[in-house]
Amino acid sequence: MHRDDAMTILVAGGAGFVGSHLCETLLQQGHRVICLDSFLTGREENVLPLCGFRDFRLLRHDVAQPVVLSERLDRVYNLASPASPPHYQADPIHTMMTNVNGTLRMLELAERDGARMLQTSTSEVYGDPEVHPQQEDYVGHVNCTGSRACYDEGKRAAEALCYDFVRAGRADVRVARIFNTYGPRMRPDDGRIVSNMIVQALRGQPMTVYGDGSQTRSFCFVSDLVAGLIALMEAGRAPATPVNLGNPEEFEIRELAQMVRAMVPTTSPLVFGPLPEDDPKRRRPDIARARELLGWQPTVTLSEGLPQTVAWFTAEIGGAAGLATGTTDEGRSRADA
Ligand code: NAD
Ligand code: UDP
Image (cartoon, rainbow, N blue to C red; front, side):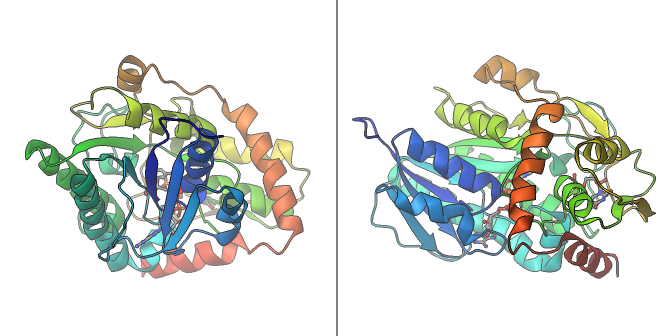
């Protein structure tokens, strides 16, 4: 599909889970998409189908390094950062520098072309929150020296950079604070809860619940998130503050494990292990701001999105997929050491 108002859009981190869905949607909308990715946690199979689009270009590059682009950009989405705790803790200094230097590079590109920029921040900026649900004006409760700090503080520094560019009039920037998102194209060895529960259940392996499983998260299906990201980017006026994007339905982790067990015929037992350091106890987004400013809210419930995700992993694991548990446990023991 081609359109007269087609834009040239850079998606940094476009070969990852969320990024590949975003690239696909933007291409389907008729835009030209440049996907910049180092393939740290992204996968070629996520973007190979997109190479069939004439208007798709793949650039293997580290976002934190200087980049020369001949195209004039209209939009810059920055999603480049590992997102799963075992992955972002595997090389914490690289995670921090990806978020700080990478965001600076993307802001500079946006400034060069007068492009709009959307930064993907995270609910992790609230840390282990003392207020519930989390509103955007809550300043957070982050351990700045702990094993999650490389990510939490990297994302907080990135937000600071974004608003310094805004205050200086150097770029039009929008910041999305994304809450736990799941769906097809997560790596089987991603290590986050939804992929771990499904992969372990499908393989008949013990399903690893950290702590007693009473901690909560709120799970957003990836198509809802992509719609929210595009709505935020295309909002006529940039919101003056970050905007939470997530699904406010809140679940205990052991509840999620039981939902997966009800969907996957499995003999896997639930096994309980130690809670990782600084693991947030409760998390649920207040999305009043997204509703009001963007007219956005999620449409896919967990009981609708989970079966689609199970179906995708069932097909994926039938192939040559990797193993979730090994990466997770290795990542945790490194992080906890
Ligand atoms: P992901 O790991 O699947 O995707 C991240 C992508 O960034 C990968 O393709 C990876 O290769 C790339 N990347 C990492 N470091 C890079 C670097 N230095 N240079 C270039 N590319 C690099 O994770 P995701 O879940 O798709 O997350 C995408 C973005 O959304 C991340 O910035 C993450 O922090 C944010 N986010 C995601 C969630 C979620 O639940 N999925 C929640 C909060 C925030
Ligand atoms: N978790 C778990 N078992 C796993 C992976 C994660 O019990 O195999 C827990 C984790 O300790 C946390 C919650 O599930 O309390 C969500 O973890 P995830 O890594 O998905 O995201 P985040 O902690 O960044 O929200």
